[in-house]
Image 1 (cartoon, helix red, strand yellow):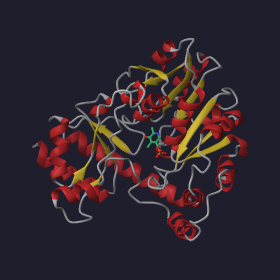
Image 2 (cartoon, protein in one colour):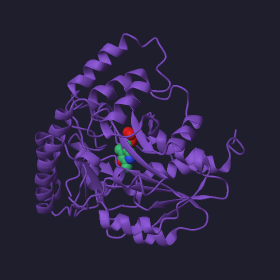
Image 3 (cartoon, helix red, strand yellow):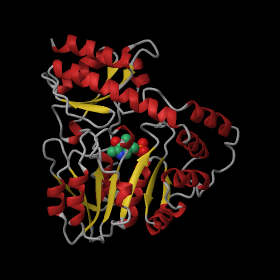
Image 4 (tube, protein in one colour):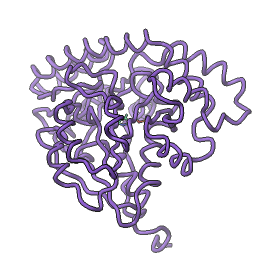
Amino acid sequence: MGLDGLVPRHVAAIDPYVPGKPMEELERERGLAPGSAIKLASNENPLGPSPRAVEALRAESERAHWYPDGSSWALRRALSRHHGVPFEEVAVGAGSNELINLLALGFVGANEEVLLSSCSFLCYELACRAAGVSFRSVPMREHTVDLEAMAAAISERTKLIFLANPNNPTGTYFSRQTLERFLVRLPPRIILVLDEAYFEYVEATDYPDSLEYRDSIPRLVTLRTFSKIHGLAGVRVGYAITDASIVQFLDRVRAPFNVSSLAQSAAIAALGDAAHVARSAELNRLERAKLFTRLEALGCRPVPSQANFLLVEPSRPASEVYGALLARGIIVRPVGNYGLDNHLRISIGTAEANHRLCVALEEILS
Ligand SMILES: *Cc1c(COP(=O)(O)O)cnc(C)c1O
């Protein structure tokens, strides 16, 4: 039977998201010993979750027969205290990805459109496509979101803008000054989403913390996640800090129990472990610098990054290098689906994993 008419056209047009290959899959395919593959493909925390979060997950599992608190009250209270913002201005989701989907679904009408940057997080585009809303991508410049071009691209129809800072998959960021020049040109009716999934990894002193702009930009949505520095990617929990009315409308389009009880408990515990966050940031700082230098020496042209990954452009075709690394049990991320056919994205791992990667690249590229 053909697929004609099975789904609306905007759904048929969606290319499914291709995630980083799981380690178990590579081990299965290549007959490698379980636990021997390394994954540097999805920007996970190589130190894992905080031991406190693991303990919270264990304890909460005993109560898994109860539905979660649908309002995520305790987690939202913890976030509101942590960030010093009112409780009503915090929304949580099953990963920040869910919040991205809900923003596209709930806030953009038929005659309105979303503005994106090219080579930015693919889930923005996917969210628009799934919601059936129009979007336009503005080209990047030198691996960096071009805020000037984005401001110029704003039209009467523009309703929502997604910006990742630092950006994935490039790792680049825009400065406070660049953001402020953009904000002056932003009509107040537009919802501006600043996705700060890699916030805790940033070292640049001119990096703008979007929470500082809340008073001047009423329709600002700050997105953060527990998937990256908190090491809870498998648990699925992220959050938004934004105007209370936006939180209320997000509540109308989300599922009643969108964040699991395990996720709520683990996130609260993770938020309370500042030492684990500091350790994770420090490891990333040291290893990112070391890996950058080695990759540069190998002719891989790494792009300066404020996040926990590096975008590289190897001297041999990226697809060949990707395959040769897989053959050695190492998974990195091809980024052809971002329009970066010659590049690979490599997450910063432990010192040992990064070393193994460099030894393999030396073999492959020599
Ligand atoms: C990883 C990432 C996220 C986090 O997604 P979750 O759904 O919270 O796991 C959000 N935005 C960007 C740009 C990312 O790279």
